[in-house]
Length: 432
Image (cartoon, rainbow, N blue to C red; front, side, top):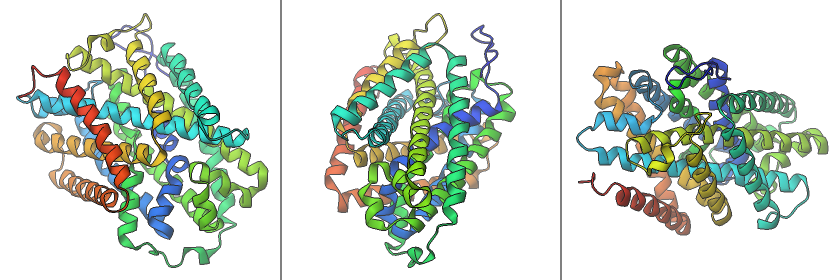
C-alpha cells in the first residue's frame, strides 16, 4: 500500500486507491450495518433521505478538510488546523484533539460491537458478553497486531477487504431492487420531516472515515491530487451504496422485522432477497466492513495521537514509534479504551456520541477553514453553508435526545465530561 515516506525514511507510500480504500473502509464499516435500524426507527420510510442528508453534510465537510490538508500537511489533521487557526489559544486545539480521539474510540467500539453482533448471529452464539462481547474484543486485538506490523501490512489488508465487501454489497443491492414492494414507501414522510433530520443527525457516524486519510498526509503520494480526488470519490460512492441498501431494506422487509434485528438488520433483509445463503453472504460482508473500518480507524487515529503527544498535548508515551515507525502505545490505548466501551455502552449511546462528536469536529474544521480561507483559497460561501447545515443537524440530534431519550443524552454527557476533563487536566498549564 505504501512505497515511500520521505520524512521517516521508509519505502512505503499511499496512492489514490489506497486512500479511497481507507476512507470507504472507515465509512461503510460503521454505516449501513451499524445504524440502519436506528435510521428507520427515527425516519421511517424517509430513512434514505436521512442518508442523503448526512452524505451531503459529509461532502461539504470534506471540502474544508482537503483545503486545510494541502496547506497544512500534518498527521494531526483537525487538531493541527485549529492550532493554526487559533495560535493564541492552543487550548481550543487541545480540547478538540481529545474530543476527536474520543470520537475515534467511540467509532471503534461501534465497529467492534457490530462485528460481534453479526458474527454471533452467524455462528448462533448469544448476543451478550459471552458471545458478541468476546468476538468484539477479538477483532480489536487482531487489527492491533496487523497495525503493529506496519503501514504496508495495514494497507494491503485494507485494499483486499474494502474491494471485496463492495462487490458483495453491490451484488446484493442489484438483486434487492428486483424484490422491492413500492407500497412500503408510502407515505414517504411517515415520521415527518423532523424524523428525517433526526435520522440524518444520528447516522452521521456512518460517514465518519473520509477524513482518516488526512491523518496520513505525510505518507501520501502526490497529496495535492490524490487527497481531494479520494475524498470526493469515497463520499459519493458511500452515499450511493447507503441509498441503495437502505431502499432495499425498506422495500423488502416489514418494519417490525427490520427493527427487531436492529444490531444485524441487513442480514435479515437478505433473507427474503437471496434466502439463507444471501443472509450468510451479507453477514460476511458486514464482518469485512467492520474489520476494514477498525483497521482504517486505528491507522489514522494512532497517528493523530502521536502528533498531539509530540506537541505535548497528550502523554509523551503516545509519540513513541516502533522500529517499523508505528505509534505502538497509541494503538494499544485506542484498542483498550474501545474494548471497554463496546462492553459498557449500548448501540444507541455509542452511535449518538460518535455522530455528535464528528458533527462538532466538522464544525470546528469548518470554522478553522473559514478563518484561514486566505491561505487555503477556500470559497467562503461553501464553508458557511457547511457550518449552517452542521449546526442545524447538531441541534436536531440534541433536541431529539432531550425529548425522547434522556438516558441516551445523559450517557453522552458523561462521555464528554470524561473527555474534556482529561484534556483540561493534562493541558492545565496551557489552558486560559
